[in-house]
Length: 562
Image (tube, rainbow, N blue to C red; front, side):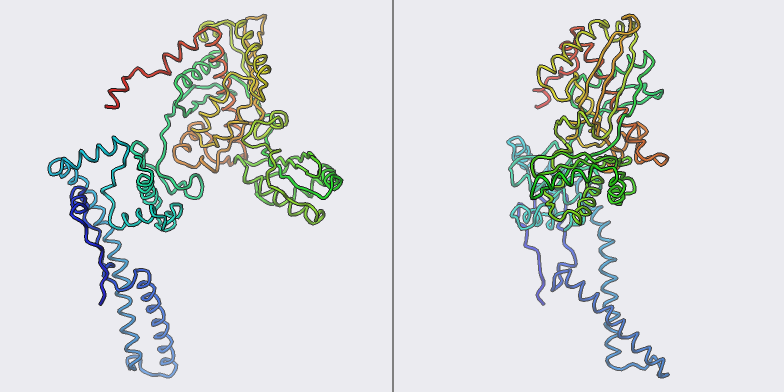
C-alpha cells in the first residue's frame, strides 16, 4: 500500500522544532491511501447506504415471517461493512477530539521548554533572530506546525488567496496568524509590536474588517462628568492626542459648575440619494413632480417601509441636472446609523417606479446628493442623521476661576476666529474651534464610522454675553451627527463597553431610536465642553503652554529603543 509521508525535516528545521518545544504534527490520517476528505466521504456513503439496505431487507423479512438471524451472503457482507464503517467514523471523530486536547497541552509545555532550550543550547540562533528583527527582517515563526507551514507557503506563492483563509480553515484566529506570517515573508518587514492575540476575530468576520493581521491599540480616556439635560455622563474618548481629554474634561467641569447644559434634537433622518437618467429633461422633470406630489407620498412610503420594521420614509427632495435626476430620500432608522437600511428602502422605491417610468435608467444607488463622508452644503442646510443644538450659560466666576479668562475675551475671540476667520477661509460647516477632535474620539471609542466624522463635525459655535455682561451663553449647532448604537463596530466588545458606560448600548426597547438620539446629544454636549475649554486656552494665551505640558513626552526615547 502506498503510504503518504511528510517530507523529512532538515537538521535546521529539527533544531527549530526542538528549540520551540513543538513536536512534528504527525497524525494517523497521514497513513491513509486517499486524502482525508475522500476517505471520510467513502465511509459516510458506505455507512448510510448499507444501513438503508439492511433496514429494507429486514422489513421484507418481517412481512414474510422470515427469521431475522437467517442471513444471506450479501446481508453478511452488509453487516460487516456497517460495523467497519461505524468503527472508522467513531474512531475518526473520537481520536480527533482527544488529540486536540493532547496537542494543546504539548504546545503549552513546549513553549516553556523552548525558552530554556533557546537560552542554554542555541544562543547563536537567539542572536540571529534578534538581529533579523533589528534589521527589519521577520524571523520565521518557530511555532508553526508542518501543516501551518505548508499553508503559509501556499499563501506566499499565491496558490491560496489570503482572503479565503477564514473559509478554508474555519478558524478566524488561525487565519489571521497565517496571513500575518505570510505578509511578513512577502514584505520582509516585521509586524512585531502589532498585537495579534487577545482579540475576538470571529466577531469581525463578514462585518467589520477583512483579511485581519492584528489590531491597533488606542487609549481611551474619560471626560466628565458631563451634566446634560439633568443627567451625568462619563464620556469615553479614544485618542492619541495629548491634552484633548484634559481640555474636554475642563469644559465639562465649567458646565457642571454652572448648572449643566441643555440639548435638543431638531431632526432625525438618514439620507440616500440615487441618480437616475432619462432620455430627456422633460421626462426627468415629470418624475420630479411625481415624487414631490403629496398625493403620492403615502404609496411611496408603503413601498419604502417594507425594507425594515424600523425604516420610515420622512421626505423626498429632488434636484435636476439636465436629463439627470437626483432623488434625496430621508428616513428614520431606529437606533441604527441606518445607511444600509435606507439603501434597501431606496432600492424598493426604484424598482416600484420602474413600472410607471420604464425609460428610467438607474445610474447609481448613490449620486452624492446624500451626501456621505464629504463636506456638503446640503448636509449643512438640510441636515443628515441627527440635527442637534446644545447650549449652556457659564457663570462669570466660573469663566474666571475655571477657564482662566473673561467673558468679553471669549465673545470677541469667537467672533473673530470661529465666525469671521472661518468665513475668510471659505469654511463649509467649520465655524468652530475643534469639533472634529471630540467627535472623532467619541466615534472611535463607541464603534461609529470614523469617516463620517466629516459631516458629523459640521458645527457653528456661538458665544454671547448675557445677564448684563456678567455671564456667557455658549452654544453649538450640529446639523448632521451620524451615529448608531446597533450594527457595525458597536457590537465589538470594547466599543460595546463604552456604549454601556453611557447607558446607550444596543437598541431601546421602550422607544426605538432613543439610544442613538441620546448618543448624538452626548456628542454635542462633549463638543460644547471642548469648544469652551479650547477657546478659553487661546483667549488666555495658554494653548502652547498646555500642549507643551500634556502633548510632549518627557521620556528618553533613545533609552526606550535600546
